[in-house]
Image (cartoon, rainbow, N blue to C red; front, side):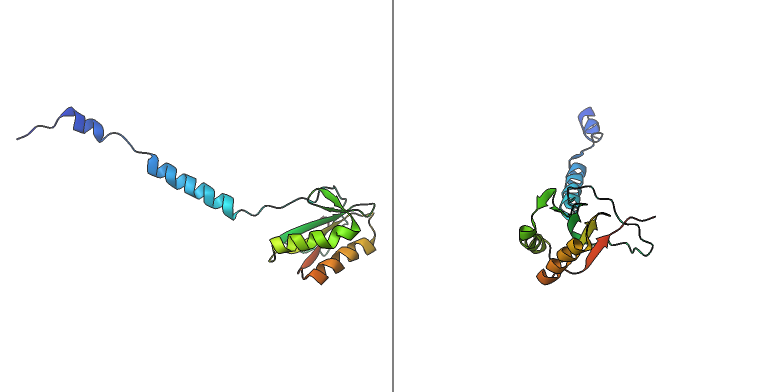
Length: 134
């Protein structure tokens, strides 16, 4: 009979971690690619209190209307004349997502309605207004 050498016994004790690391990196790439990133509007708004607010999960576009009726998208102040152009660009990037308007307590309803009308003309649906929950 043949006796085994000590080198074959040492080979069986080593654990190869390469396949496990490959799986972990593939999962990491998968989660990064499938994650949806929410862009903040760039201005802090004081939201209106509401009793009948329904949660809205599918956000594609986020627009803020500040207290002095300025429009904010992607942390940049947007002029009224460029609002339709910016909303069209964002809608083309994510046509399945809806839009949420964050309106400040001090903003005019005309400003919020202007954003909603432009979004409706572009074809963005659904359109929601963000309120503060109690």
